[in-house]
Image (cartoon, rainbow over all chains, first blue to last red; front, side, top):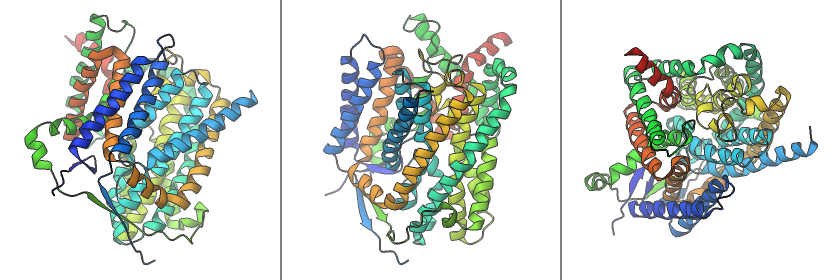
Length: 76
Length: 453
């Protein structure tokens, strides 16, 4: 099985996961922003940020980091 | 002053430390993108200015300290500032000295804060009498700032030539929105344009992947292997003065001191300049890497603290890359703050000093201890938990949200336009500092051009 990875901003990602992550977080952020109560102007930003964090958590749950972590034995 | 306010300040500092410790450990979290939206949210929510300032100071001190940890441990930069340290951190990793080096870096970072807070408050105090003569020329200062930053950058002509086109781009979008009645005539959109510049290089990378040929040519078939160095638990010396030897302390303190006076220059630029200058004096590669990286850890704190404290306390206009960038919301956050009514005008000297001290000390105390003991555990946890995809996607969502809030649907594409141009320029070698200054100088640049005809 061959993995499909891309190096972007110093770390590896799977292009498909990246695309879906963007779609998910943008969706939760903008939905939260648009349902925010309109009578108080700063609520829009707050709802948006909360939406962003929600989306972020969803993608964290959904996708695994593309990193293999090895522990090094250091002789001190 | 109301004693309950002190409580809220400490609480704000504490929350900032918790939040930005986590963010700092996540690789690739750009400082501006994580500082600006949250500070802006606090300002717009009507949080007391003194509490906002405390939060911000605690946030930058924490972020600058924690960002260096994944850099030193696994070679992934925690933020933009620590990308300068990568090369040296790899040398140290190869010599198996990460464990002691992260302690040295944390100690240097702490000393950097302890030096910079009093010095930048002093510089600000000395500068204040001249402020009334400087401020009326602010719009000119931005123009000169853009030229000056170009002249000290690596690719001078390229940077100089990009100032006017950038200015035209920003002003043409503003005039388009005014002309279409999308925003009122007196609204100068800045925040989303600003983030457009910040996220530019990422946008260019993402867009180039939409080209199937590029995508296929860049595909690799392996996950990134990350070596987590062994960190001895026994050596729990926490006194920062004892962790650094005399030579390290001297170089690091001197450079952090000088950096305070150069607050108008780019933090990344200064960090590289000082780190490399000190490093070059040592022949042994390991010694050189250690000296560079400890110097950088201190200088990073100095550039950020002076860059926000001096312009904010002395002038009230964002006249440094840090003030224009991550700290922009402290100067300008309509409708709460404007350039004529912001933290500079709302806080007395004593209140300002108090906020800075509470913010910095709370952050140092908690994050220094946290890092000295658990740097490796936190790094491992974050690397195992947080996919890079989520981080990148979060930035994209932030920028879309702020663009939409500034001027609706059309501005999402406006900011995309800015991101693609400034990201391309960035990859060609025009640094952030020049681009940010051009954004602030844009109205004046256009005035000049019309006048010249």
